[in-house]
Structures are given as structure tokens and as C-alpha cells.
Length: 564
Image 1 (cartoon, rainbow, N blue to C red):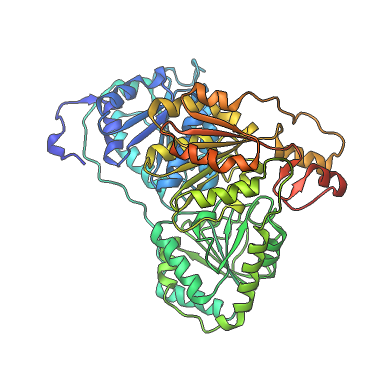
Image 2: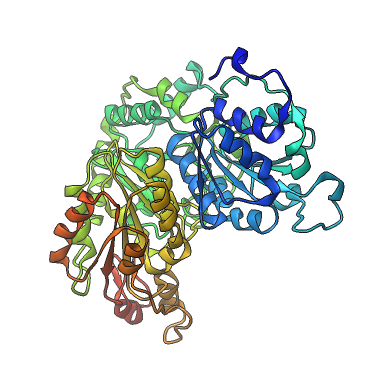
């Protein structure tokens, strides 16, 4: 942070002061699309360009996805700037994803001049109402002298309790008014702590169990918290299931890891959760995917004994009444628990071993139909990728491969939307590569998913972000086609895709690209992609029968069901 003595004493435009305050918070990247309603803030970005890099994208949806992914990856708010009306509307998709992911993010929105508000001025929206249902909180800065106050509060809100997105609207005329710059201390998240007495009660409940389970949600983890969770689970041979898109929270190679509870949940995972007698649910909000449509726990009183620990008191008892509600952050919780050896672990050792065996059996994926076998390609990826690779994906059946069948080690990261939003993976990969350029970043996309935000490849090229994109092309919106085959057999409609040349698309943006048609071509193609200095895209030609890892269209038609 600059010393306050080095700051100009004269009054300066609020737009410039705003960007300076963001730089004080360690913001190094701003994502957005330029707009006339916040030109004064853009001028501030120019003024402070040596401290904060601005990434201007091709669509506000891409920018907001990048900010959401940055927040998930770093634990600090991703910052996005968009213009009023259409810009804010496009950006909503990233705000919704950040909220469902419990990810810190701050969206700044240009607004009409203050004297025009309430008249339905050009592109005017009431952002308090507009963002009220999808953001954690919404502000409007009407007084330039309150910029620092509201920025500080936004950072606190975005990172504390259940992290989430905060929206701040900026009247155009307010940004041009002058205010004094002040030194803003770096805002750090506040995590509720787990006390010794609380930890002892949790240990007592686990000790009494015959079939205990740790259900790890993806809210608020830091590296030390993940390490403490692994040590505690392995010391006591406790099975661990992670929630939707949370596979990178726990080393998948651990003898305690038993899989994930998410969309299309495997039947064995449902059985583990339903059969557990004591569940330590840490950092989960008991979402619909994690509870299999709220069926794995009885509402309002689960038959399992549930210890629910969460950094936000608003999440405790929101859906299920736990036997023990613990207002604690996950990092503090497992810091308090680790090192304690449970005497009862002899009672559940076989349960943990059986849970692990079911996971290993499940990820042994059979060959997929057609000339390109995705399972074999994934095994090749795990051989070639470094341990700290970052994987991203959007939404669709293709996303099952990097989440459920990729074995994530303790250093790898997975960025995928709990909101089930298509198009997240491409911007997320770009944001990850910009934030951590030294790491290998691989994006998994389906053909429909890629076309939601594929235009951001030109953004990546412009700013030197060079991930590797894998685009699975089977000519269909796979997830919806799967549901049609299950519930409306012989009435398929609206899910076929006529696709462009994805490799040609990437080459036009300056990326190295290949089309891969056979399994045996993939290993060398990916090696070439890894060596490319320009980033790469591999279009994977998939058989249309491959609708999901363990289900074909023919099987769905024959059985009207099947586990994915």
C-alpha cells in the first residue's frame, strides 16, 4: 500500500479515488466491458494502470464469470465493472453463479445521473430491486465522500460469513465529483471460531457413531483448513464426501475420500449419506444437488444425527434442524478438531474402507462408444498434467469428466459453477491463467457450452492468457437430450446442434488448434498443446451415442433410465 503521505492532498474525481481504493485492497485485475456511464472510473483505471490491470471482455457475462472465478480461486473478491441497463443485465449470470458458489465478488455498475433517477431514464434500472434477489447486498454511492466507506463495507460483506457477490451502482455524475483520497487498510475476512467446548461436543458425537461421515461443502476454505481436514479425517479413518463442484477440497487419492454429492449423484453416494448415523456437515448450505432434491435428509428433522458448521448463522437451521448447530468457519473448525484421536474409529473402519472401495469402483469408467474414448483421454490427461493444474468447466454432461472421473490431488483446483450455468468454463480458464500464469489451466467444454462464451478467446489472446481448451463435440445439448430420452422418448426436439469448425475458430484468435478424431491421437495432440506458447484448443470429435460417461442414447431408450 502507498503511504498516505504520497497521496495528493488536492481533491480528485471520485472515479480515480475508487480505483486507488481497490488497489489498496490488493486488487490486481479488473474485468469488464467499457461503458459511457462509468468513464470517470475508466479514467481512474488509466491513472492506476501500473497497480491494477484492466481486462476488457467481449460480453459482460464473460467478465462477470471471470470475476466469479477469480474470487473462487483466490478467496478475495473478483472485481467487475459494467455499464448500466444492458451491461448490468448481461452481468447477472456471473452474480448468480457467485452467490450459489458462495464466492466473493464485487460488481460495479454505472448508473444514470442522480437527478434523472426515477424517471425511467435511458438504460435506467433500480439496482437495489434488480440485484436484491441474486446478490448478497446492493449499494448505490450517491455521495463521493462515502466511496471509501462503502468500498470497505463491500469487501467485508463479500468475504465474511457466507461469502458472496455485492453490487454497487455508481451514478455517472457522482464519479466526476471531487473527493479526498484516504488510506484504506486492507480488509481481511472475519471467520467465526470454534471453541474447545464445542470441539469436544463434536468429537463426542463422532465417537458414538457406527457410520460417521464428513460432508465437506465449498464455503470459505483456505489451504490450511483443507490440510487440517485431511489430517483429521485420515487420523480417524473417517469417510469424506464433498459437495457439488467441491472435488478439489480433499485429496481424492486419500483412503478416506468417497466421492461427491452433486447433480447426477451416484447411487452409492446416496447410500452412504442415507445410511450414515452421524454427519459432520462443514461449510455446506445443504443445496438441492447435495441432498438429491432434499430427499437424503428428512425435512425438517433428519434421521441422521447432524452437526452443521457454517461461517454464516443464517445457514444454520435454514432447511434442516441439526442436532448441533456450530457457528464456525471451516478452517477454525478443523484446526480445533485435528490432532484428536477418536477411540471409536475401530467401529467404522470397515465402513470407511467400503465407502472408498465403492468410489474406486465407480471411477473405473468403461470404454465409451465411438472412435474417441473420453475415459482413456482423461487417464492420459492425469499422466501429463502437473499436480497443480487448474481445471475449469461450464455446465453439461461433459463436466462430469473433470469433476467426477478426474482424480484431484492436494494441489489441483477445480472451477465449476454450482449454479449449473453454461458458459462459465471458458471465462474461468482465462481468469485463472491471468491470475496464476505460471500454472497449467485446462478448460473442459461441450459444444453447446463453448458457444455461450467462446468469443472470449479473442479476449484471452489480446491479454496474453493462454489456457488449453478441450471442446467435446457430439452435436447436441447433451444434458437436455439425456432428459428428453428418459422422460419423452421418441420426442426429441430442439437439442441438435450444427456446429462451426472449433479448431478454425481458435486459430482465427491466434491459438494453436487441432481436431482429434481417434483416441490414439490424443496423447501426442495434448503434448503439442502443452508445448504451445499461444495456448491451444483441441476439438474432440465424440460419438453422438456418448450422452454421459456411463450412459448411451441406446441404453436410455431401452431402459428409460440409468446412472450417469
